[in-house]
Image (cartoon, rainbow, N blue to C red; front, side, top):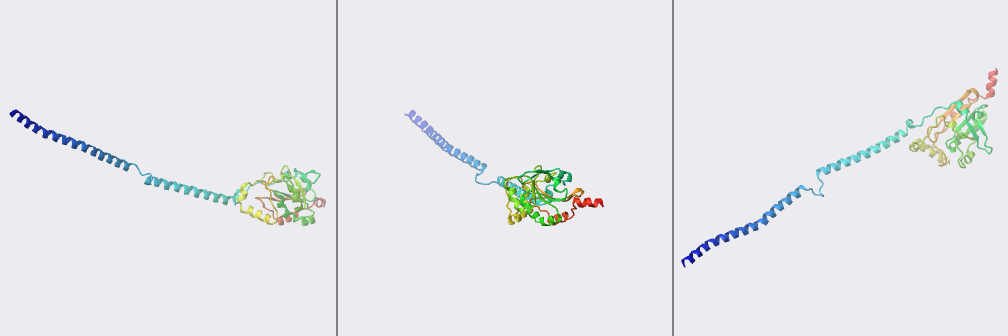
Length: 283
């Protein structure tokens, strides 16, 4: 009986200890997930703070965007400025084609083909060796009509009026013939457009003077075409017989650049026929 009581006392002393240990263990187990949860939450919060919001523009990306926009504006302003500078330069004499003056020997040697039915070929010298001549190297036939208005005055002086074209395309010459009062020849080797041929390409279409000439021709009833070669510039020559040589040379600077017909008439009045020169030499 005494032994049983002792065992009961020892058992009762150990049970509280075991229960306490069990309660402590259960508390530690219950506290474990809460600790892990708090640590996980802190990790996610720190990661969220470290990763930027894709919908939020940071200061660095905003600076890059501003610099990109400034660069695009600079390129646009530079392109506009370059275009304006190009248009300005195109309307000055700096960009006009330069050409050498033609010599009498160069013109005399030209072979000219008649545009009449016979198609006869003559030397250009035969046009002015007796009474001189006014010769127009035509870029487009419509440009020769104003010079043709001098025909009555030139006939009084005994000076022939001649037009020279580069080619015979379609019915262009036949359509032009009623508007020109002189003979028309074809200069296939383009002697009257040299010796250095002057061309004006796309530059001519941004020149104010060219558009003014186009409008003037259009108002006069002349219409251009896109047939044949139209970029080689022409000119006008007043040539006297014998030693008089070239009295006037007008080189077309741009499309539709007309010669002053008053200057042509003044130069033609200086022409002295070969017969008069011969008589003067005899005296």
